[in-house]
Each structure stands twice: as structure tokens, then as C-alpha cells.
Image (cartoon, rainbow, N blue to C red; front, top):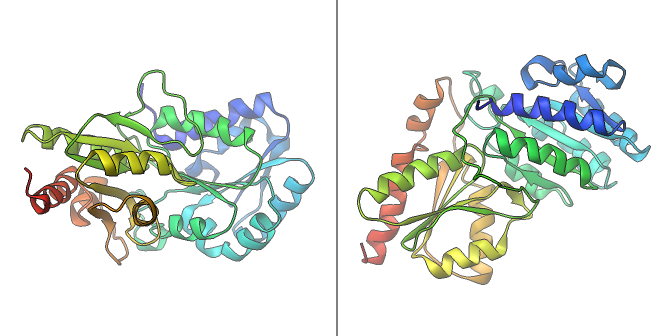
Length: 313
């Protein structure tokens, strides 16, 4: 049964907690929403309720990490990226502290919470801070593997966790590795590059295009930093262009990461699908995908524009 991504995170956290007594959780009064309450119930002595004090929580987590613990810092992405940015940079990143920062309710699909609780620039913020791995898993299967991988990884990590159930796209036998993309669909005409929940939208867009005779490659990029340069370069050389799709502003996130690779290694036509210099609003996931031009049809439109420009459709 497919789980909500946040539930997959919460259950995986309990599993690694059983295996590693150094795993601890610090929470900013959002345990039920972020699903770290599962950990609190299983290991109350290793769960620390810090209240609505995210900046202080980052400093405490850094101190715990430097003392040998593996702290998971749990709050909404808007607070971990914006409100506590200075503490993330100085206490966590500059010290190379082994802190795992949870960015819950990431992007605009955040349970009808509106702009104040929608992190649309968190990838850009975290990518810009030195030494932090930035991850955006697509589904429940990948999330469970990601949690285990970041416990084993020595260093700071920012992990995006979305709220709801999203289509499962992880292939059978899939093994997540930090820094590695996964090709979900073959294609020689155009490449659709997704991260997080937008990868499932890319898969649907590829199916739309297939009905028109267009072969769209789908590349899932769970690691936004360090990005998989080899996979991007291969796609640029083997297809006519790339479309990136992210639950985030088009500035500084996945689209920027892919564009940087193309400029330096393999120039190619590219279109970015994401929020275009705006904040989100209240609405259902489906309404927001349509309103902000993030839906599979909008991704397919972006692919058509590349192919029309190439004159080879």
C-alpha cells in the first residue's frame, strides 16, 4: 500500500532509531504534522521537544552532533530554511555538524496552508550553503531508503518531506544513492527532469506525449545537490532538449542546477517548469498544480515548445 511521504519518513526514522542509538530527534512543536511523533512514542528519552524556537533548535542539534549524536531536526521547510538560515549556515554547515534537517510540507502542496507555510525557495537557500547535501525524494519507497542513507552519511543534509500520498515511481529493485539520478523512462526526443513529487507529474507528461508519438525520457533527480552531472550531460547529448519540473521557484532550485551543468558541460535547449517569481496560495494539490502551471499537461507543453523550436516533431 502506498503511504504518504511523511508517513514513510516517520516509520523509517523509527527503524533506524532501533538500529542506531545515536539517532535523536528535535522537534519544533510539529511532531504530529511531520510524523516524528512515531519516534517520540518509540523512544521518548531520545525525543526533544524544543517548542517554536527553530533557531535555537539548530544550535542545540549542532552541539549534539559534535558530541556524537545523529540529530534529526524536525519542522516545516519554511522555518528550517528561512527562519533558521543563519544557524544552519554557521552552527551546522560551517562546523560540518552531522545534522539532518527536515523540511516538511515543502513546496506549494502543503495541506491548504497558504503562502506563509509554503516553502518555494528552500532548495535555493540550502543549495547555496556550503557543504549541505540537498534531497527531494519522489515517493514513499524512496523516502524510506533516503532516511537510512542519510544516517550512514557523515555530514549535514537537508531533506524535503512532502505531506501527502503521491504516485509511486520508484522502479522495482531501486536502490537510492546520494548524488545519483535514476532514469524512469527511455526516450530520444526530449528529457523531462523531475525532483520530489514533480517526478510523478513528469511520468504522466511522458505518457501524454507518447500518445502523440513523442518519446520523452524521464529522469528523476532526488539529489539536487550534488546533482548528477553525468546523467544530465548524457540526456543533453542524446535528446533534443530538457524540461525541468520542481515544486519550487524556477530560481535557484533544480532548474538552476541543471542549467549550470548544461552551460558548463553540454549546452542544450531547456525550459524550467516551476513557480515563476511568485508565492503560492490556498487550494487543493490539483488546483495548485493547474494554477501555477505545474501539471503534467503544462510539462508536456514545455516539451512541445522545445521540439517545435528544434523543428523535428
